[in-house]
Figure 1 (cartoon, rainbow, N blue to C red):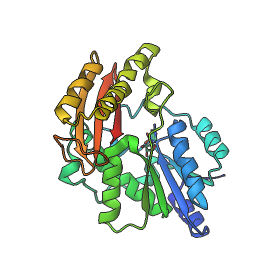
Figure 2 (tube, rainbow, N blue to C red; figure 1 turned 180 degrees about the vertical axis):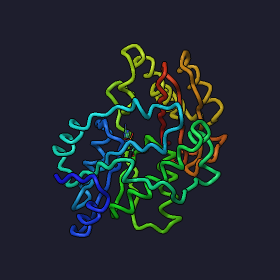
Figure 3 (cartoon, rainbow, N blue to C red; figure 1 turned 90 degrees about the vertical axis):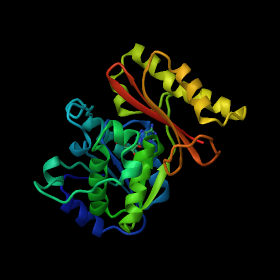
Figure 4 (cartoon, helix red, strand yellow; figure 1 turned 90 degrees about the horizontal axis):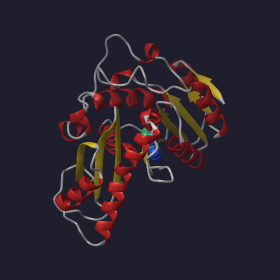
Length: 273
Ligand code: AMP
C-alpha cells in the first residue's frame, strides 16, 4: 500500500493508474462502517484510495476537533489488510491555503437539521470533499447513509458542479445490539453505550409501527420520543429523499433522522424507508 501526505504526489500516482478508481474519504479511527465502504470500493473498482483527514473546517468552535479519536498506526494496518492501494494522510497546511474561495451549501437543505444545529459544518464538509475529489479524481466515491444529509449535499454538489464522480451511498453498519458504528462511540462509557442503544431502538420501534401501517409522521415521532425517554433528543425529523419535512410517510421515499446527546457525546442515526 502506498501512503501519500502531499496532494501533488497523490495526483502523480493517480495519473499513472487506469480503470475504475474507488475513493473512500474518512476522518480515521476506522471501524467496520468504514471497512464496509472500502470493501465495496474494492469489489467495484480496479484501484481503491482511502483518505484520513480530520478536517478542521467542518468543526465548529467548541466541538471535539482537538479530542477527535486518532489511531493512525491501527488505521494504516486496517487499510493494508483491507487491500487498499493508496492511503492519503494530508495535514491541514497542505490542504488549505490562507485565503481561498468558499463553497456554501444551498439554503435548503443545508441549513436544517445538522446544518441548523452545526452552522457552517456542511460548508466545511463540501469544501474538503471538493478538494479530495479533485485530488483523487475517482470514478466512484463511497459515502455512508449514516450521514444522510451529508450524502445528499455531496451528491447535489457533484451534480451541480458537473464533477465526474459517481457518488455511491452505502448501508449503515451497526453493532449487534443496533448502535450505529461511529468513531465518536469511543467517547461513550459502558453506561452511556446502554443509553445510546435507545436511539437505534427508537428506529426499530418506528419500523414496527410502519409495518402496522402507521404512516403519520407525528405519531411515529411521538412513539420514538417515548422510546428515547431520558436522552437529550436534539431532533427527530421525517423527510422525503430531498429533505423536505413530510406529514405522511411514503414507503421507499422517506428518511427518519435522529440526533441525540448521550452525556457529552452527540450521536446521529437514521432509517431510510
Ligand atoms: P467519518 O470518518 O465519520 O467522517 O466517516 C467516513 C465515511 O464513513 C462517511 O461517508 C460516513 O458516512 C461513513 N460511515 C461512518 N459510520 C458508518 C457506519 N456505521 N456505516 C456505514 N458508513 C459509515
